[in-house]
Image (tube, rainbow over all chains, first blue to last red; front, side):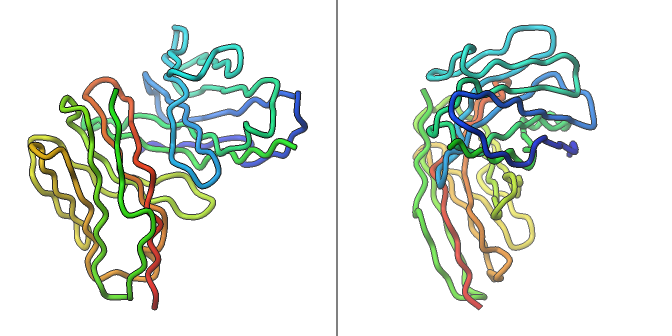
Length: 115
Length: 112
């Protein structure tokens, strides 16, 4: 499986500010995914990020709130804009495996607290 | 769209006992069903998965069964150990979309 790192691992932010989360993979991948995990909850897909094209957002998530960049095949960023306490969550990136089995592997997550 | 229901939400067993977690899905087009283990402060770890052309898969103490007709799949952990304590998530996906729909999670506690 790919080695996935995220920065920062955690942060505490003030409402109204923005935070950019980085996801780095040790191999080239076509698709990268961003998920949100609210406190004590399950994972919800925010968007799919393909290199060279606009990210595809899931229902309930918009580009103005969660802009995503995908400058190359090993890196992506997710920005949480104009934050409110409701944005306090763990944000996770994931990438597909290489076996063709449809599996996904997750990064360690970024734990965001908005005050 | 796809909806995945997971039960129970919490499960407590004695060390050495078996644990079973069940999930149901709604979209008959789903054909890939992974299970993840999430320990405190970490990202989810893929522990086993099954595709819709297989009814059962086993990996040491972990097994997954799939009933396509009833649209449900289950995770079985035998000879549980304290280090199995974690939150377990099931998920469902349709080939080539890459989109995983997760269940609500089960907090498993294995008492020594």
